[in-house]
Image (cartoon, rainbow, N blue to C red):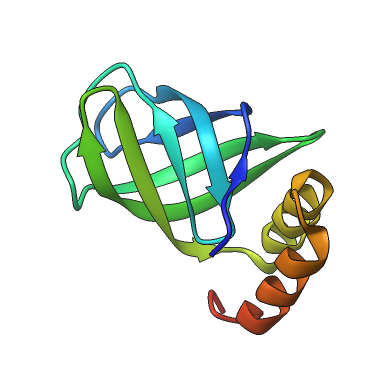
Amino acid sequence: MTRVATTITATLHLTGQAPLALALEDLSVIGLRARTPRAVPVGTACRIVLAAGARELAASGKVVRSRAGELAVGFDQLAFEDYEHLRAFLLERAGDPGALGDELSDRLGYLG
């Protein structure tokens, strides 16, 4: 999936731990890459809340990569309304909105 560079903020919620603020580096409809102040083990289940425009979006997922100061989360579940808002957010910021739009339409329903 095409990743769109962004500097929006997100909050990583882990069971039994205080929420962790993330500074996103890139985002797609299937996940994100962000800077983090502490390590989170690969495979850790999480919930992400994104500040995407005027609306907050929530997704569940798991940490798929973690190294010094950086992690990647793959989304497992994203409500359809949040998917649509995230899709619009990404299309507004994409370098090639036409190509991203084609790619996203091919993936419609993958999280359903």
